[in-house]
Image: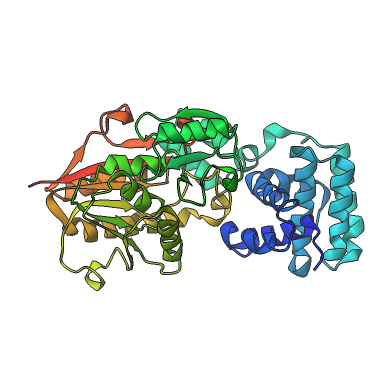
Length: 431
């Protein structure tokens, strides 16, 4: 197979947008076909970029292609999106972007579309701007699906535009220091020695934000397990859970294991940690992370909504429930979420969250603590879900989270202190 990067990008985008496959599954397959040092990053940039600006790019193609491509020709629709994205949003010289994109038609085995692809890209170069931008749909103006824009307008009447804008940005790189192997201060000194600039350290979690993203293998002692990559918002979970010596802890829906590992890193004399996830394949990542970091936990495949299938009757002191959710808080990192999620998914997710909460709550000891978390920004998955749960369970108390600024639960919005969108509620069970 030829290694034309634009052809590989078009194939990846076709698989994600038209076939509903995950970018995190499809992109690595194509990256195996290219030079990792030279072309891996470019392939990622093209795929992520097109998914960020998909409606806008498709609107440009519609200006010049009156009859949409279908069937086996459909992949060339995505090739044209890749071409326009390069011209509009990258530093690749226009002539190189056009030439390489047109050359991809041969790789994709349809040379007779070469003239069409070339004509569309040349037409865009001559007329890059929309004639009447004020007449564009909200989806094209904001590069998000219309249903999601409406939900944000309802939930965040003052902030919805800023949330959408933040979602189009590249995610920053956050580090979590394994405090079993190094203190945060000592690791900061290592970063300084390695000439890796740090932007900030979060006071509550001690998460480290780098000035710019770098290859993980350039981080001091990464392979030896001294540090992990984890967003600043996700690093709130373990310190908020505040596990103590001897505690028996359940990390529910744990894959890929970042929060499990963080709990263990912060509490070396913890009693026992069980990392539970319904997908046994995803638990492989949990085990790999535990091994790299030199940590130990019980890794268990099981359905959180049906604990009778796996629960041994030993109650937990603390439970972290990182519930299945829409992922609408982490669109910066996963732009395919915008196009894989449907409005109808939200009600189903809310129901599943409710079922898991009801099933897991009895596993918590009286006096115990549960952290309910999602990487969503939708109130129905978060504050509304928790309010209903507390109303339905007399032994459930919603505890204040001081960092929230409201004194109750904590909704972090995308870009807030450079973090992903995340939600936390701290629940304790009456003695």
